Length: 314
Ligand code: AMP
Ligand code: ZN
Image 1 (cartoon, rainbow, N blue to C red):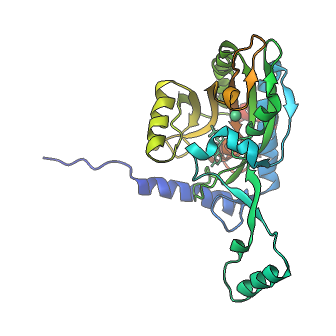
Image 2 (image 1 turned 90 degrees about the vertical axis):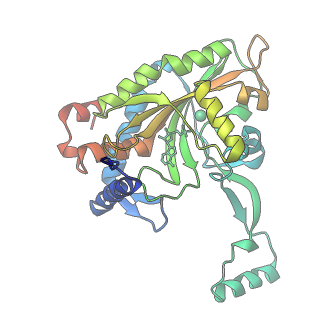
Image 3 (image 1 turned 180 degrees about the vertical axis):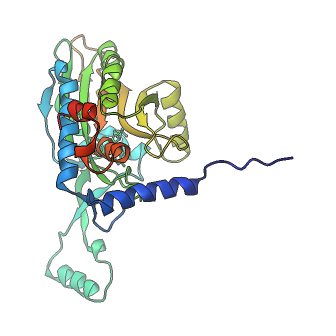
């Protein structure tokens, strides 16, 4: 009997990730900040990143979305209502701040002097790092929507506590979202109706794209049920690309997500007809798309194929 060895292993994948990371750092595209998944970015990275963002915006221009921008932190009260902590406690992160007096400050400095950790002297500041850039939106919509609902263009910082040496998995990153809040039908139409356009946009960058049901890393035992539900109900699709070659699982660089009435219920948002509002968003993962481009076409955009440069107006 012949035993067939699997052709690839987790170690191969780790090696492929380490290779890409080493290349991006070696070519100076990314700069290591000394904590896994936190990078500085060079001018070349920034040029491609801005071109990706501008192309993403062009591809959704017909939505005529209202532009909104938020800070990278959100009030604890609005974070609470998203229920994020129930599904992804391990990815969430809070801000702490020093609120003590002179005595506590001296104790902090003494601990620091002894080489000990001093963060325990800080207190929760009722602020959370925003994990998904559409979250601060829903609290602004409490009440009744106009007929036809509303569509928003939101780009901003996301933080997720998932330190990794995979250069595709950052702790601090950006997504550009196109969010619709309206009826059950208009939310579904927003999600489903734009999948083809989003796919074409990513393909025009010379990336090989597949659209697959998402399988988010919901936490714990209850999380396994939520993950099953997400797949069975086809709530979310991901646009994946084989950054590490055809033998390894491809990476999600964008997503199309239907929340049904989750945010409508939590934030008290109603449609013009008085029903609970539904919502959906398309999210371009800006760093992931940018890094997928460097992985696919090399570290120097000047040598990228002409059609890719044209699609990106680079
Ligand atoms: P999600 O809300 O999980 O669908 O995230 C939207 C998009 O953000 C994903 O499709 C990814 O492109 C990107 N993204 C999610 N997590 C990370 C991460 N840890 N590092 C970089 N990009 C990410
Ligand atoms: Zn969203």
